[in-house]
Image (cartoon, rainbow, N blue to C red):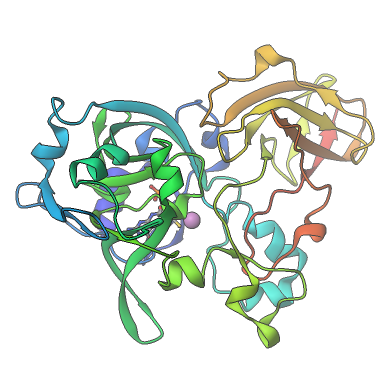
Length: 377
Ligand code: MTE
Ligand code: MO
């Protein structure tokens, strides 16, 4: 799979882990474009990258559906049966900016073997495919009180000495709203192998973990999946939870990310030489189909805020981030802290400090992003 990384990804990707491959784009390229080029989209894997031949590929729909059956890719792509949909979607890993939680609590953080993501575990692409709701209809609909769908990825990984497929679930209500897609195109190209070729689930507005790559089976079930990725990982634990009293049932299954934002330039510890204005840029995103309405920057720890003018924000879309840029007035010589926060269209905003949202599992680092730069004016 290392060959694939070199073939499909940008040479400047920051490799967090070689196997399973995990990587994010370098800071200066994360928000270079409002639509992330495929080669720069972050990659999160639990196991290897399956090499699937699209000719023999078929995908199964079973469990509590009236007529369980399989589909070839050609059948799914037949536009007379399933209308093609194209949507621009931001996929964010719930571990984005985890490094800040690790750095705040090095002792506790060290014990959690998780990818130390910075601000780049988020990317935006135009996906093409079909609505899963139509496929379930083609199987005669759900039966016997099915309320959730389980999604199987062809990749495998070890968990508690067992070989597991990547496996999560999504509620039927989300599928029914036409917010769950089966996709085969990313930014007008066939899905790269690293991003799930030949078939990938894309769940609009949910964390990346639900958008299953290398999808080969969907099973209709009554309750959320008991598979470890659904019931033991991607949980938001209360602050009292630690290694000594870990109980998976205390965690909230993370689905929609809260509003968050990040400054991608300058970066912390950077020496910035400027003429009274620091050029800043970054991203802002909110899960669940909410979108950033306002981005603000502060130079005094978060008492007074500058508002980024709306024309400096990228297009407003239901399922995507907005990238932004701003010339921040600064007459300080020496160290300054720059703080960034976003308000979404439901007027949610970000917690002030990373310490207030520290959690075992180190997910959802959505606090105001704070960086320190050395200003030379
Ligand atoms: N699908 C499979 N089959 N295997 C995986 O390990 N990782 C998930 C999700 N889908 C994963 C998967 C997680 S945690 C995230 S954040 C996204 O894929 C990342 O998608 P990307 O690698 O295309 O950026
Ligand atoms: Mo993730």
